[in-house]
Image (cartoon, rainbow, N blue to C red; front, top):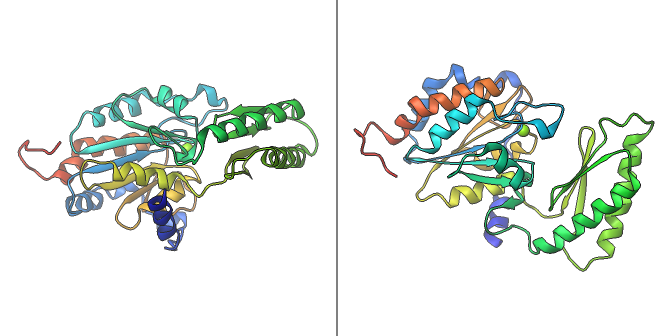
Length: 296
Ligand SMILES: [Mg+2]
């Protein structure tokens, strides 16, 4: 746990500024430059991290209907069979949910914005967290009957987009605040919870200093040899990754928001093109033209 905290503090101390849309070049216009960067990086292995919703799968109104495009699934599957690249999908969804939706074996997965990892958990007491989240969900369901309460085991989300009622936002927030305080005071676990409002949602999660950037750091450290990190995502929480892998790593923001990434692509279809380029050209640049003598 200590080395993770150190790493976290080290990089949050580095104030990488976010850049406006105009100053972040489109990746697909800069593939030559990207290729040169891969060719000169000094490592011969790539870690490729990807967000799920809005990156591999188009955003849809019903989150339970989200699925990767056939093209993204195909190219990701092809990449997963290549030497010299380790892949992981890191999502805000629960781990089981994202793993099932992507459905590709032999790649890594992380859920709950990186809090839910296969193997060791960043939580000091995952069972205590799950039990707190479960109690929070039960109480919220009783008090916010018109909202959808999603129990993601170690985090929870209150959705109120479809609730047509005055002051719904402030009502949800005050109920969540009261419930979280109640549950925290009734439990011995020292971790505690925090809640953050989003667009038509409130998220409740364990109050620990751990984000998607930390999860990516763990995947990178698990690569069998030194590797170059590359990450593609559209979420606000993906900005933590872009900052964590800078300046060596390559960040690609999906969309047109301000970002700390190095490049951007317009949407899910351009993610396909970028991944296709990696499979056809980028990986060759990285490992060098070694006449088939690729590392594994
Ligand atoms: Mg996303």
